[in-house]
Image 1 (tube, one colour):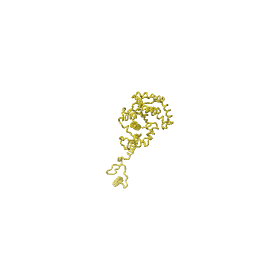
Image 2 (cartoon, rainbow, N blue to C red; image 1 turned 90 degrees about the vertical axis):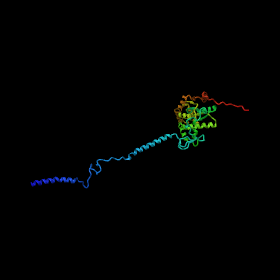
Image 3 (cartoon, rainbow, N blue to C red; image 1 turned 120 degrees about the vertical axis):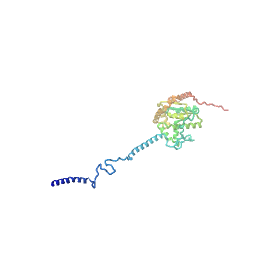
Image 4 (spheres, rainbow, N blue to C red; image 1 turned 30 degrees about the vertical axis):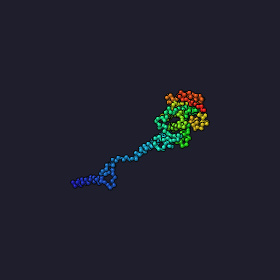
Length: 330
């Protein structure tokens, strides 16, 4: 009996020891390593639940930088296109301010004032001023025929090309270098410059020579030039068109280039001028012809025969040569 009780007690002690050991071992040791999932504090969630990541503003900067660079480049392109044909220096007759109002014209007739194309109605009426446009390809003989018309009819001959060449050589001209480049390349000078030069020359001839009949040679070279001139200066009476083949005109220009000294009388510039005339000036002839305002002349003939045709055809438009009256004096 006693031995049995002793045995039971021994087993009880043996069974109890592991429990005590387990209880002792589950108490927090001095250097306890927190296990995953254990609470980190009385008010903290378990470590396996991570807090949401903060959104750093640094990730937005690349997008903002790309947007800023794109905006800057777009503005540069727009500004460049808007100022493509504008002179870098101040325009004669205009102040350097950014005001969009037309400046007061200078007293100097040689100065270029760009007020012509800002006008919404013609400066003169066809009853006051008669303008005949003279068109034809380079080397068609426009200048030769204009000289004869000036002598016999009293016209004031204005050559758009001559006015541009004079302007490019005028001291202090804001457009000199630009005009040289356009002429050399055989392309068209911006119409604002050409129209204003023509208007200034017409005013000067009216004031100093009492002229009201004008032959404008080599203009308009584009439809927008024609529309702008007739809208702001004066409607033309008709267009005198000298028609010649490119082969004939090329031969004439190369011959003229031997003595003219003109920068555009070389084969490269001549070919560019031919193409420019066909692409841009022929639409002007076609539009005026559809309005019944074109007098077409065969310019391949000899100069005298060409002039005879001119006289016969413009007579139908009421254009008569000057009649000279001699008064006998005592």
